[in-house]
Amino acid sequence: MPTDDLSEAAGAVDGSLAPVGKVLLDRERLHRTLVRMAHEIAEHDPDVGAMALVGIQRRGVEIAQRLASHLEEFYGARPATGAIDITFYRDDLDNRGPAFDQPVVHSTSLPFDVQDRRIVLVDDVLFTGRTIRAAVEALFDYGRPAAVQLAVLVDRGHRELPIRPDFVGKNVPTSRTERVNVSLEEIDGRDEVTLEHPPDTR
Image (tube, rainbow, N blue to C red; front, side, top):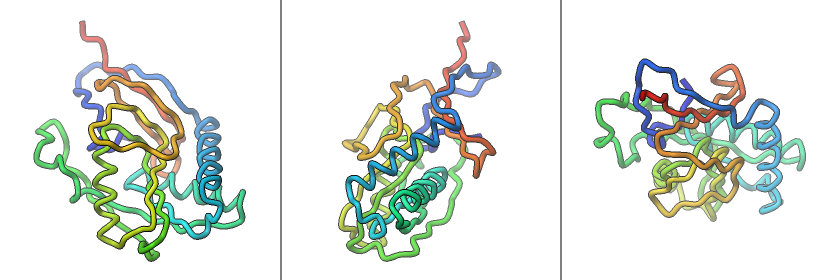
């Protein structure tokens, strides 16, 4: 089921009642959002062929690929793309409790030299910031980039670390009990972003 990254989870409790949600981005709005983000990335650094977009496993990888395709379409150069897994860099593996499944380990693929390259980390949902901290730590194990920036499809607030994205698709005020779900065609068979509210059990 598509949800926030596990370390960025909303903390909703499973129950017999289905959560109530609303659509934040449908297919067309998600497409327009990613096109705008691609333009913002290029405006910041027009040399798009020299940068690299690194998606955080799992849905950040597909978003990075889409951004790269938009940059190629509009600016004639495709940035390098890669994927990074942050499972073993997380600081919450021992504190997540029995309500959470064990994290799934995905692959890291950085088919380019990280050293002295401008890197844009890409993720689907930004919440506490702990996933991003882990991603930066993992990235520096492969070299010292010239600069690291952050692009996120949804920023839902509630930061626990001093991390702020450079490129944001949509800012969504949320409560900690709500959950942001990102569905992508490549993984889930549809493009959609929804906000789920916990069911009222009163």
